[in-house]
Length: 294
Image (tube, rainbow, N blue to C red):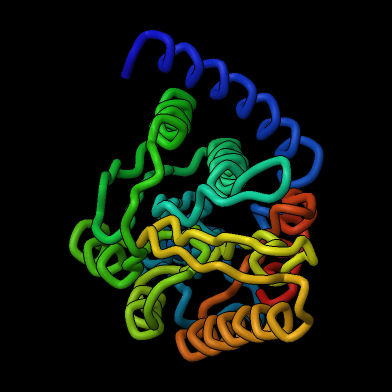
């Protein structure tokens, strides 16, 4: 990376840090804590037995030592491990709004990272396209979060097709302990429902779907040349014809139907992010929905 590029990345890191921390402080601090469970229950203390306490919770060692019945009390272990799995294939570079899908993904990832940081959770990062590009194991601390954001900002979109299955299979080998896994992608790839289901049995997988409104509807602007960012395939359309626009919308509806089916079969929750809508509200709505489910 050149000095100029590094300077630009660091400038963006500072900007995103300000944006992300504002969203966390204003909207998300409480919702995140309620939306995700820790690794389980941990021992808290012992107290004297009172009628109605569960017999199985009696601490027999303390009871024998004191001559009076005592029970163990537990609290939920709050510390989480959070993994951001980010699709950096070239389709993410598309954008008809202020931010492209990839730029939106970076900002959403930063908000999730700073939210985890506020809870003193570990945060890791994996980015992929047709293969795993880089994996950074989960760690704690602000310096780690800033490093992860720098890595994302410095990564150029990869001209390759998306292979979510390969990324999840890789994680199955390197991340053995349960984590909260945010899978961020536009999901423009082959059926990954089996890999999602397997990953979701071990981890708490959340599919963060990234969409641009122009991928679902075509404007009436005459002749238009479309290029597939991942395969370089060109397609010329005359958008003046209603049937052309209708077929384009139908194809988008079919992609959405398939994605909905994949996630339903895998029992994976969805966090839908659109580049034309405020993502903070989508995050807050999702966290509150998760809290109600708990």
